[in-house]
Amino acid sequence: MIISTIGSHSALQILHGAKKEGFKTTVITDKKRENFYKNFYFIDFILSYEDLDDAVIKINSLKDDGILIPHGSLVEYLGKERVSKIETKIFGNKNIFEWEANQKKKMELLKKAGIKTPEIFESIEDIDRLVIIKLNGAKGGKGYFLAKNKEEAKEGITKLIQSKIIQGEDEIIIQEYVIGVPMYFQFFYSYILNRVEIFGIDIRYETNIDGIRRLPQQYISEREIKPTFVVVGNIPAVARESLLPVALDYANSFVNTTKQLIPPGMIGPFCLESIVTDDMDIVVFEFSGRIVAGTNLYINGSPYSWLYWDEPMSMGRRIAREIKMANEEDKLNLVTT
Ligand code: AMP
Image (cartoon, rainbow, N blue to C red; front, side):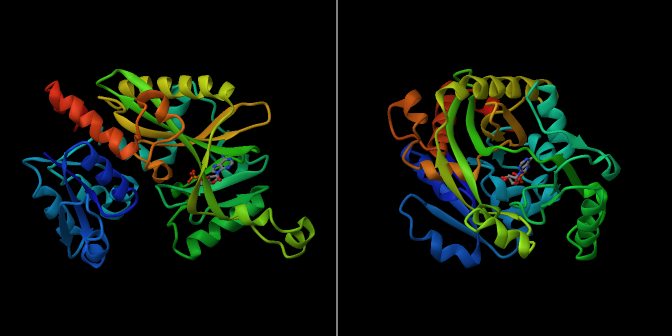
């Protein structure tokens, strides 16, 4: 069996973990990155593609004995249409991709799971507090902005349309801006062991919002510096232990809700992107239904994965371990779609 992934995002971690679990590994990459991936001993085969249609052909060349591990770049790079043409088995539930790409559906799912979420404003006219305006899909925070009233919101949205970043208002979501600190809780749902494992926590390092706090307040207001949210890296975090039971309850409830709404439900890695307030509330403003890049911090295991495994367990390796266990029990078809 070959474990494969697209050369981007968390590919190194995924293939490193797969090798540790004894699998053959393949990276499917843009020709330009071929030399980069040659540096790594744990990559057995490199399949280079010329263009994105060719990428699908390369992925499908593994359909007999390959499993593709999806990550954040898969849908963003290939687009929905091409992803639907993939015949190779995908680890996890590919039906979740569609929900992931749609901010409104995402929030609906979180609410159904009984998870605390920020207020959503369906119309610009309803805005009555500080809001963040976001774009659909995993764009790394690009184009997001804050607005303290309707007028600022309208102005910002018009700019997005004029600069052709979006075509219309239906491509944005308006959320209450929750004041607190970000904490992104990473989990793994094991279908084979029937449990949710808390895997790790990270904070996204975002420019310029994380840089602004280094400047004196007066400097910011005089120059009217506007916060932006472009993700450029990740910082590790651990939470107060008293936050963990709530986080894990949310994660279990999330998994159960996906089973009802998106059968066969969540399988494998996911993340609940949250703001923790000074009431110690965890408010989840977003989820990722696949491996997040913040797990790249924990290639040698995280403070939490040690508690389950007592060995260096990256998320990439955890995925491979699940595939291995499923294969041994003849249940591969239950952890792939
Ligand atoms: P997202 O693409 O939804 O992960 O958002 C990118 C960044 O915007 C996050 O990492 C947060 O810093 C910030 N953010 C998004 N939504 C909210 C919210 N409702 N309240 C506060 N900050 C938010």
